[in-house]
Image (tube, rainbow, N blue to C red; front, top):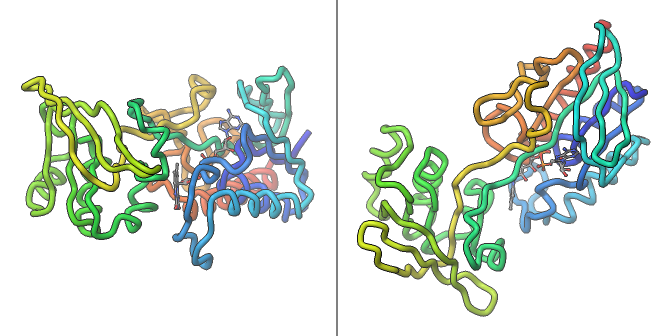
Length: 307
Ligand code: FAD
């Protein structure tokens, strides 16, 4: 059995594994796809001390760092079920989708999240070629350009306010007849001169030419009319879904499905910790996930010392 078993191989999981292994305890990491969301990222320019890198390079470095400490890396393994320890200080079990099972004194859950897609033609084709999901990450790439934000909830309206300070013009599209964000955010958005708000707008297609996004089509649901806007970027902000479906009913989750953790990364299950985008910790970023992963590993080590 492991002392620490990390489930998930993104920045949070890699940091947790390195921190645990450096304590000289038996550490394993099981991941469906080592690297996580970073694999789908082009430029990374906000990981402090690394001026610029790209996703695949960053993912390779994560794996190299983990392997340098002799961590047992089990790639292409999906956790399917978590079984809490039968008695205090007992072993926690993680059952894998392939039928295998791993046991450990402590488990750190770092299964991350995925952005919800609009699922219209052009979205996959122009992903990272104008279609973006993370304003903190990719906003500066659209400096002085025209962008749209899809989604009128808190994250969409926050993204539009944020982007309005960087880009030339922002069009916010909301499917319903009202924005769903907090009133104070809506008021702020409405006060900005370079923002257009479209309600009852159903996005139907992302258009482009020569491998780059050049606009989007939508249906005005009030009139039924089909319309098209020319722009250089689209930020899809209709939700970030945590990869926690497999933990439902076992580990306490928020109403958004995020794993609830305390200041040391401890979940509702004794000996089970969590970190990164899968948790309630706000602001989903690489540096934050990595920091939280380190914290959860120290939390797990603390737990081992006391039990
Ligand atoms: P993830 O990176 O999501 O990793 C989760 C890991 O868990 C993966 O290995 C996955 O395969 C695995 N997994 C999932 N379910 C299971 C399961 N059941 N069993 C086993 N393994 C499982 N952030 C920045 O700071 N700067 C950027 O420039 C930036 N750009 C981004 C661009 C894009 C396109 C995207 C999508 C995100 C970007 N982000 C950026 C956000 C950043 O990638 C995330 O905040 C970060 O990767 C979260 O790390 P994590 O380890 O919590 O989760």
